[in-house]
Image 1 (spheres, rainbow, N blue to C red):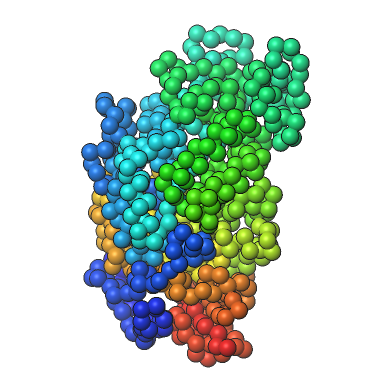
Image 2 (tube, rainbow, N blue to C red):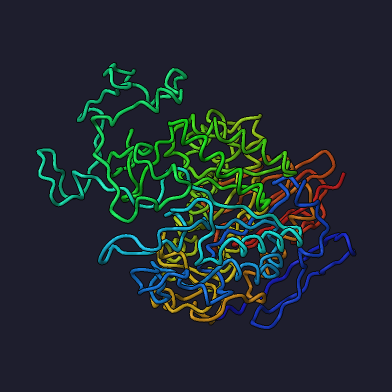
Length: 619
């Protein structure tokens, strides 16, 4: 359903090229081109030295974004779908998007306001895994076989070089997703997968995790059968010598690994083909110790405690920094790797990036946990520079997606000091409201309020973006949100195509604020959400306090309604007001003299339902 909505706003802004004022005007939003502020018009510090707090990140899956070169759709792999994994009608297979397509759409991404791009893993994947209904492809990038090459489905190495060069020419950063916890599923286990095996411990039906209590283990050194401390999986320095690890035989608690014929050299670098560099303990249940040592749905869980593995991954990712001059890494499945791995790996990568002329190289981990106490351990104790702020996403889903109390937002920000450096690290956390695993906020909103109008759905998603952009942290846009994508849940159900889709379960969705479906091309810069995010991005990029200002919550409620905070630097203070109530206006009084930055800030400030205002404190 096309959204028809009139709204009034006052937006006073000072761009570097001109002083422009929009004065209290009423605008009908439709499919015609809508005039707005282009973030491209704002002069930014160079990507080479720009701090991450000055960036807005656009996150995308290349396979689902734009097909720039149809000749690589099958990844140069002959055969059928089961070989190359290309089936644009199936949500679990390659659809044809590639890095050339991302390069082609850089102007679109930049016009939205993004100054950086984060893309899912681009390394060569095992094209297809699984059997029968469980079969799918590595379109997402997380089933890596060759850590040194770009997957041909995505255009190969030259396509990445072109993308990075073109982004840098536009003063934009490129952040790559990296994986160290696991590789593609190549290793098999004698007890689980060899049909000829009839041992007494043959597991059924799959490969259940073998834990320490059920399968006591002792590790042996050389041929002398002399036990090594059975706590080697801890981080003690006495266990971290290459000599000790190189002499370990198979621990009793693991399965017996083997590599199927023809796949002995499937992985690159070559050391990844050594089965002794994997845990080989069976399927994880994501609980207890197996969260660290078990296999994700059959993926080969790497023995990240081993010094050879640490050294190998450091070398791999140093090479990507040197070769392509990328600007950061997002680290997949961080919590499922031992702490000492990150303590050994992160500092050398940061030092190497600095030596390569990238002093603000950005590394942030994925820790899929909504509790700031759990998330903050990885910055405060483990030593990661930042982690994805799942806590923020969870509270926004509660407050806006489910209509719960704005007190929950105040509670979230009250834990910022936990992240370290007197709370300053919290300002470097990537914040988001949708992603490729959780799904889209719009889906939760429509599930919670199935009768919600298109106009209110638009207002809620717009409000959520405002909250993300103007509160502390580094805003991350999930591709398609700006086009009103909704999805059908998480994972594959939230990975729609931006170019015309052929997936029925995507194309039957009712998108927000448009008559289009995902069967259409969805790079519409006149879409109401695109236009709104573009305006908010321009404000963010030209207002230092909205990027660096200390955040202090001023008001919240024990129910849907007002949420107010200020962001202050030594030179500037901004008061941001949000109203999450769908029916009632809310008021806020300040003892300070305010002028309008966005909305009307005169006198006692009234915020309309599902709206926001930004007010500048006069000094």
